[in-house]
Every structure is written in structure tokens, then in C-alpha cells.
Image 1 (cartoon, rainbow, N blue to C red):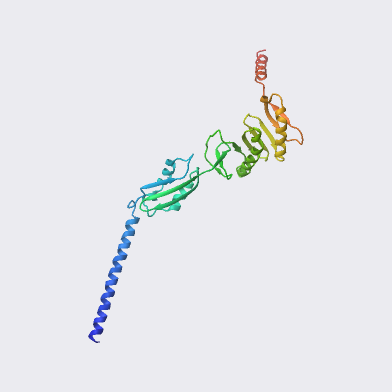
Image 2 (cartoon, rainbow, N blue to C red):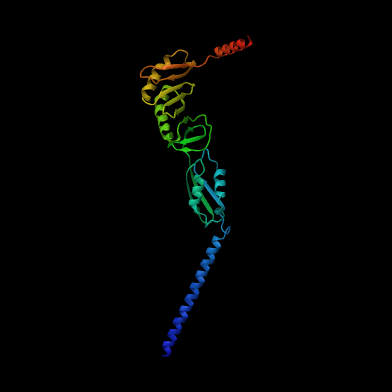
Amino acid sequence: MSAVAIRTRLAFIGGLSFFLVVLSALLWGLWSLMIWMTTANQVPVNSLMIQGEHHYLSRDQVRESVLALPEVGNFFTLEVDRVQRQLQSLPWVYQASVRKQWPDILRVYIVEQPVAARWNQDAMVNTHGEIFRVRHDDPELVSLSGPDEESKRVLEEYRSVRTLLQPRGYRIERVHLTPRRSWELTLSDGVTLLLGREDLEARLQRFIDVYPGIAERERVAYLDLRYDTGLAVGWKQDEETDNDKKRGTKSDRRA
């Protein structure tokens, strides 16, 4: 083998060795960097940016929900999907989007539940007819009730009858769908309308036509409109009559 060939081979081996050493150093450096980055609390999330318009959900609730995740101590290992699921488990959260911003910021955008009404005394229903379990006593919100699987239908029916009654000055306080799928409406003056299962619009129109002509409307407890024609009136109990009955019962007992 000639001297030139030997030098060429040695140069090749030397260059290859140098390349392997550099490559090994780079790989070791990258591995060390990854170990450092994934070590707990090396790069924690130091800032939580909360965005979105909120009326019922407080920022403290959002912050506490995020901080409850153990992964929040490391910016690199924290999964945004995990944070998103955690936030969307909050009753007042309709949607949540989460993203990380270098070097240590977590940005959260919250879409709050679009509240439509109270539902069955212990829950709420949003504008899509979906139930979410939280109690909020807002007197300005209508009260809807019925089987849970019918929440969307009840909301749609409320919107329908409201367009008929509201222009006439009647405010709906409660809409109830009974287990037998019969409709009942309670107005803001306490009068209950028993509407049955069908022909609701025609029966409400009958109420609109007849109710203003009823004498002593303040004594009306309910109107039963479940007839082909006409209606039945139920009157509130007269307090004086009740008291007389109670006094009479006591007198009979003394005798």
C-alpha cells in the first residue's frame, strides 16, 4: 500500500472519528437538555392568562381548577388537552381553549354557558337546550321544568308561547311539562294555564280573548283550557272563608 493511500485512509478515519465525537456530544447535549426540561419545576408555568367575558364564572375558579393539575409545575410536560378537559368539567364553562406561550405562559380562553333559564329547581339550561348542573336563583330567568330528556323541547315551547303572550303584556314565570307530556304555564301574576298536550296556540289565543273579560281576575288561581271550546276557572281560596271554617271547626270541637 502506498504512502498516499495510507495517509488518505488515516485522514478518513480521523475525520470519521471526529464526526462521531461531535455527533455524540450533540446527542448527549440534546438528551441532557431534554432531561433538564422534563425535570419537575425546572420550567414551571408562571403566568396564567384568562380571557373571555364571564358573568357567573370567577377567575379564581378557573385558576384553582388549573392549579389543581400536578402537571402545571412543568411548562413542557403540561398537556393543553388535559387542561381543556379540566376546565370544561366546570359547570359554568361551555367551551375552553388552551395554548402554551414560551417561555412560561398558559393562555386560557373561556366561553361561558349561554344561560337561558332555570331548570327543575336544581339546574340550569343553556340556549341550546342543554342542562348543566349548577344552581343559580336569578328572578329574571324563567323557570322551566320537566323530564330531563325534554329540556330542549321545553325551551323551544317557551320561546314559542312567549312570542304570543309577551306582546299582549303577559310575562311567563314558569313552563312545566308534566310526566304525561301535558303543558302548564304560570304567569307573573300567579295565574296557571292548563293547556294539555295539543293545540297550544289555539288555546292560548282563547285565553287572550277571554281573560280580560273575567271579573275579579285577581282571584283567579288557574284557567283550564283543555276544552274544545271555552275554559274553566279555578278561584283562589278566600282567606276569610277559610278562617270562618277553622273557627267553626274549633267551636264544634269545644261543643
